[in-house]
Image (cartoon, rainbow, N blue to C red):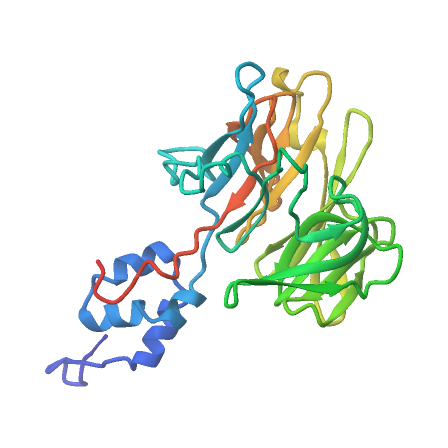
Length: 333
């Protein structure tokens, strides 16, 4: 920063304190942080500070999705598509080849902060590994009796009995927000909550039953899809006041309003399923039509954009937000 004296001579440079520079860098997108890493040695040290890297916004890179060929060995094939739908995939090998032999056919269950939860079905015992412990492991929408929590520090699982009350029914749709896991409760118009230690259990009342939840711009979002024959309708809600548990209806739109004249690839209906909510922008991602076309819907501009064709025999697309916190180590370029 250059400051000129009143006479117009002898310009001098004012150096910002490192604390202020670090605060500015922590608000930059990660790609910008990578560029600033090359400015100087002092900036490289700031960019490599774990506290700065943890606070940096990490945006949606794309989606993993899985297809199962109708012919052949019927083994799952994993794919990755950029969120823009353009360019070479950010993940060049989506097959997860690093998994041990015998585990590479595991299917995605959930994703959070750059980490994926996978489930593998044992051919001998037919046992299924899942976070939510249900009476029937093949039906995650079942009565919850407890939860197993994994600690990456100890490498051990801890079982906690449920404190949500008898008869609580939860789905596997969940999201981590404010240090708490949130799950959709079926039939009780509420979200179930539990902290990472499994010691604080609670419920957040909702204006109606929701079909999907996510986090965007620091707030908890929820989506309800009403079946209206050939013209399903979406309503999107945001929990603006988390402490006061106050929900605000942010947007409502029908399939006909989103897509206009039904594309030929949709078949006989406007059917679609919500896949994700963008963590930073007012975008919701949908898989629509017979061929499961992945699309984004901009709630502000009320505009749909095609991204990719997932195919007929596919599983849900899972959003991928890279965890860059270990990328900018001291001395790296």
